[in-house]
Length: 201
Image (cartoon, rainbow, N blue to C red; front, top):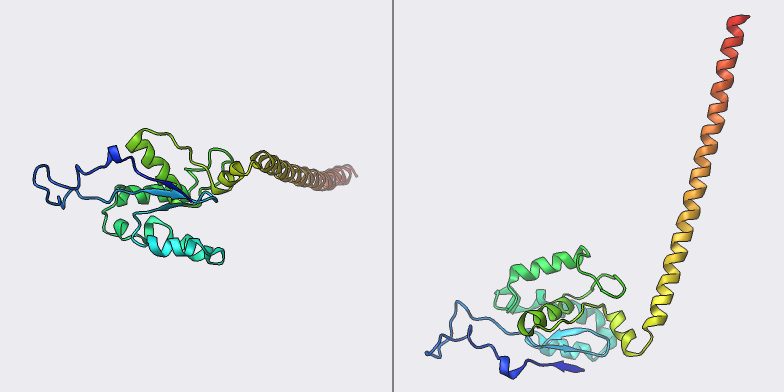
């Protein structure tokens, strides 16, 4: 696991303590996050109130579902009490955008499954002016084991197959529609001719 630790020179105590008094400023206090990324590209926050349980679950592949449920800002007490570096309202907005695919992987366009992946990128941009691209865990792991090109080719092939099938269905429906109107158009013309013949007779 790679530990993405905070720059000690950038340790942020200005909001935690009132200048010159050394007493907690309860109005400005917030918890500063620090992040770790595992080999699968899953971001965890070391300041999460349940980080000990998250770390335990992370070591057991058969408990991935429980890990994913717990490894989120939404299960953290710092989020619940609005003590996090990211305000609760901002986290809610980012989560809403994530669910509506307004924020997606810049490499493959897939939905980002984990809120912390986005916050990790935003945090380093805001605090250290470091641009960290938002990519999904699948792209992260494929970049790590040099299989990204194969993954993109496979995804392109699947998309082309899907497009081909859609076009075939569209053409089939279009031809069926033309045939439908041709048959009923022919019946209508024959009906008009019969009326004209009846009138002259």
